[in-house]
Image 1: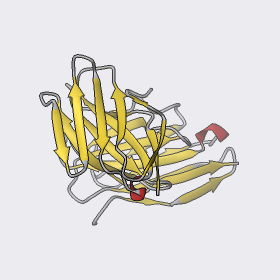
Image 2: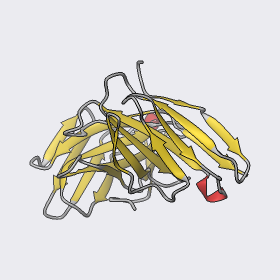
Image 3: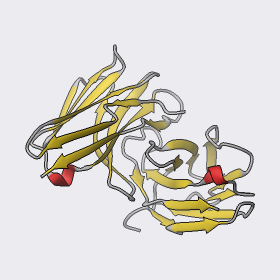
Image 4: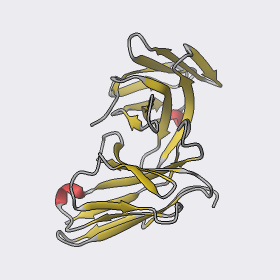
Length: 112
Length: 115
């Protein structure tokens, strides 16, 4: 079974607009990661936020984490056509070997 | 190697055939994960290795699925008597630090089609 649920499942925006994707999860986590997947390819790590952090930035990416609500959001600012891809949140569970489980993903389309 | 390598890239099997999928992780990476990804879905956890030890196989769907990593590097996922529902992309990922799996490096996957 999958740990996270992304919302929305699909998002279509114009180039230059911001894209926001949300993720909810169920168990206690050590960290939360966001990955990107282009069609037919493997996943690429984008950004990580630890359980004791609330916000993280990397270039045009901004991630927030609310552990009390077990939710995270990924904001992509000034989107480009090349950002078109599927985005997944993944959680590394606290305790044990830190199993990494993925959500169902948000399919983002950026229209030029 | 420079990245995680998976082979074959595509595999077509007749129902009932056995298949073996190979994963070459990044050299020195301790952690290795296998995931199954159905079309339009997120990767679903199958199994986890820390070096040669298989610490978690709770995601393997049935006893037809078997994974090994005998020398702590290359891993093989074997599916016996394949069924149509096994059709999916099988992804392998590795991580350098088993204590905090903070960044997984993925291969391009093996797309398995069972006819």
